[in-house]
Image (cartoon, rainbow, N blue to C red; front, side):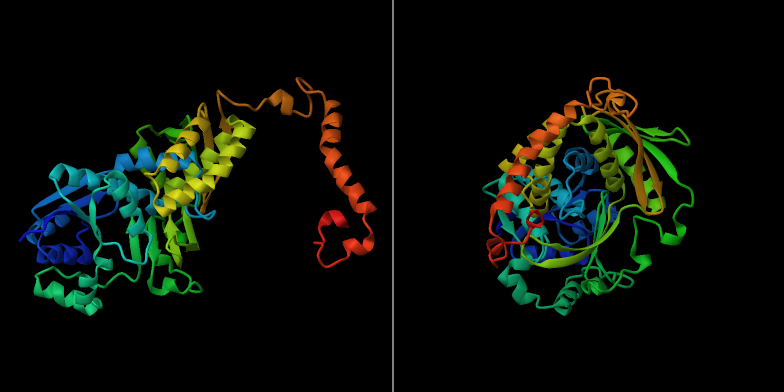
Length: 425
């Protein structure tokens, strides 16, 4: 007896192909869903493979523009970065993918959704929190946490034997030495020799940046324009070429960053599930955009708004990393970030060269920078003598603290319970 319809997030790879057949063995009617978020895959071949393996329907969904406009750009506006280094390429893609999966399940009357994420990683959390946030009644089949599946597949050998028995095409050529997740924002590399944090990655591993010995020998200057904190145009200063379409300008930045080797990081990070993991990432375009966005804020954003926003940015990144994109607290933070970005307009010139990018010029119609006030040659709108009162007011508590220290017996300050701070010297 059929157990009902399930929408499977399908890649065309060996693992999700095995899951497709296994779900059929368990009595489910399987609808495959292939999300295109810019990864270098043969989507038509994956669709045909799913049909041959028994999928009743296959949806191939192009989510690239949605990914850029509704996930990447808001993260850029928030200056989101996890643990000061990771720009969240996988974390941002998962809610984008999972949202469409839920929509397909609802349209097809499917009671179940399924994915191939492992039971040790972050992706299982990101997928499933999105599923439940968007459809509280949805049921999730996670094979890599399913006792029946785990009893049947105790290791790689069992998976390969099952594939042979069920006519599932085997991967050709050598197995990649790394586990990779690819999309238009980034590519990540894990496992293999990278599990040893003391082992440096090989140069030939990188795919979104050229090898170091092929990085361009001439600096390249580009101009990035912003409106309300979101990029609206990329111009190559040398050729005058411009791109204003959100997806196309993002892909153009990827190309620029690739030839200059921009966007590589190698980190050990803290997973939400409590495990530390080593990952190497290439995030080309977003690295340039972050550089330019921070710079346009410097000239156009109010100081106190910036300070408040900077307090919220780490929490924004944490929520994205942990899978809480569709959560009330994220709604609050998105509203705050969008408000903070009002009138963050203008352009920034960025020089790209040999693995780095640097903002070198900027202009904004809403600039809070006043050249006359800032100049050492002018006193327009600012009286230097006022600084004396400003200093005296800020020194009141410092003087009071020092007087207390001076009145305190030396033996009290020398006791082990007192931290020897700099103010006690």
